[in-house]
Length: 320
Image 1 (cartoon, rainbow, N blue to C red):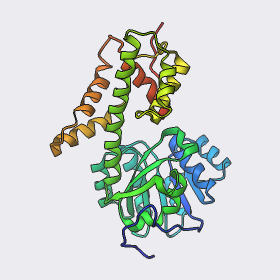
Image 2: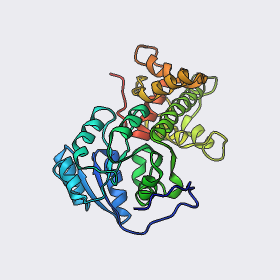
Image 3: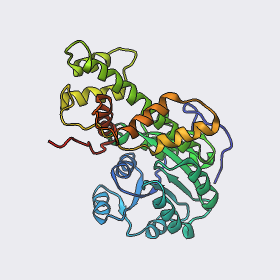
Image 4: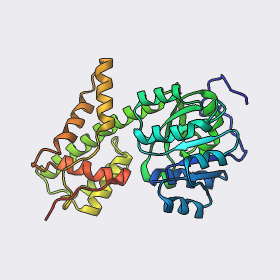
């Protein structure tokens, strides 16, 4: 195998037309999108999940089913390319423990979940295979559009998996190697911190409009802003969707905002690096405050609904 030492860019990166075989462990919403997009691109997939029905469904879509992580590894042959899309934490370590006896330094493992970047650097050192930490953004909308992929790890392994990344991402411009092990999940961590702050800003702006001096149609405001305004974005499109489906007053959407781990990691890292991130810190604090407050702030209610928009997270609703 040739291991390239050159620095690749989205415009100069070589493209392979050969068919690849990818093992996918974890067939939840995001893992199933990986399977479907890789199959769509003409590659072969071996799929495993603890949920037997999920494996059956993937097989119906064209994947080769495996009945265990070990079985999946054995079906992949001498040079294994494996994508883990399991919950961050113990599930990743458990999958790696099962795989380790079947891995060599010619193999590649991708962790596509939201792992903490220091866990990724540790796993890269402990795993026999080349380890790629892949921050994944785009949510369920990635089924149609593709994901944004932020990859860390050995350059040769990233280059080798370029055809797979092209298939899973929005295309060649939708993924890149950020740097060494840990950098992919590090960039995704900061991405999520930025996301918190953007959601907070939209929430506060619409709260002022909702409580302000005019009786406004907030769906119309969001739609108008999204057509040419400086602050147009996908999150703003999701604001428009929220007001269209829930009403200008957001109906029974509660102000409880779930999540918070990646934002916490971002703030902790900012403290360690002595970098001020007051907007991200405040947005994280608002998220935690939503769990102890009974004030029902409109901005928090909108953040709750936006999490459904981009990630199909469950909407907390008020009891009637």
